[in-house]
Length: 73
Image (cartoon, rainbow, N blue to C red; front, side, top):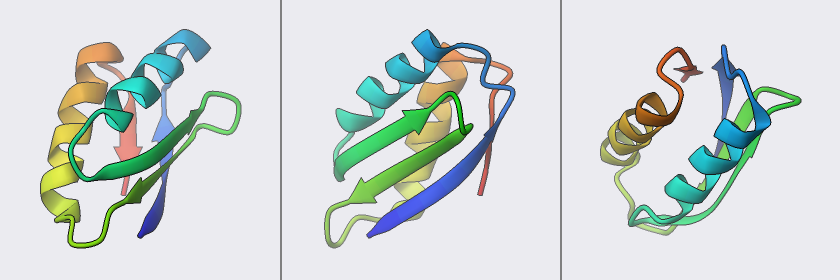
């Protein structure tokens, strides 16, 4: 399944790259792109992945890298 989320207050391309790389390592994620220019994040999950549990991990990881960034679901 592929889901796209809007990001608010993502301040730098380096942080976007760190978020993308970290999310790609999470269990259940088959691919992820985080675009600083468009302020969007697209996550592609493997079949059977609980998206709610995954998104809690994604939010926690993103807050660690960019505390002011909000993921609009």
